[in-house]
Image (cartoon, rainbow, N blue to C red; front, side):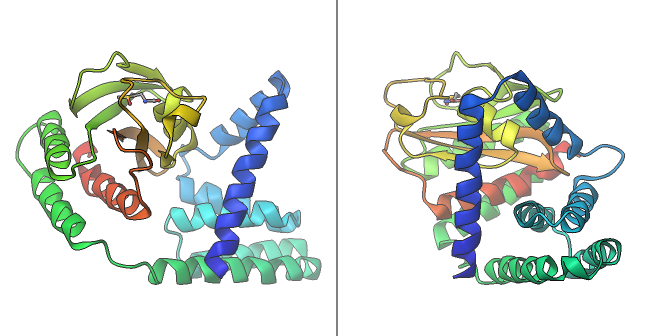
Length: 273
Ligand code: SME
């Protein structure tokens, strides 16, 4: 029930942002990009910035802003105690008039906590593949060789993963093709924001496209591709690269695929140490 409310909130926010972007002029676009930039990790890590945004939103009594920052805090692995201390600062600064907003904030946080403890375990074949990825991650070879082995493994072991590749971030605005398994692609450099890969990098979250024919911001590699998933490799909100998978099967990627591939990316993060 609670998770539904959060999922609805996320979907509505995404939809409304798309509509805003349809009409946005330069000022609006620049403001949006500034907003994204303010929360990128710098001297302060992403999780602290999210807590600051949360406190400011509580004091200003914007429930939507509070919900958004709670979701981001949850993604950034903020603990309940850290969250309570931050909200307490907001309460003291904003006074008792923020209490109704504090109540709703705690309900959302509680739902986020419950959702993360009630997630079903990964299907067995994914769990086994994940263990192999973890072994490959520890091989004493250079990063690209290990990423290549992961591409080969995923492409060979999952029948509907028809192209598996990594894009590596160059600076904060460009993706460069790294190791891949499948047909060569002409898209070797993709700016953030462009195509499905660029969207995942700009939004710093997984993007699943179940029907590429319906996606306007899409860079075609082959006419055979019907669906795609792109999972960013993130550290403290910074994009290090991404895992991109194309499928010749329509709507190939389930919620279990998404969770599995997000775990694969998490296991591979130490390769960027
Ligand atoms: N389809 C991607 C381009 C990369 S290929 O899938 C390998 C996109 O729209 O970004």
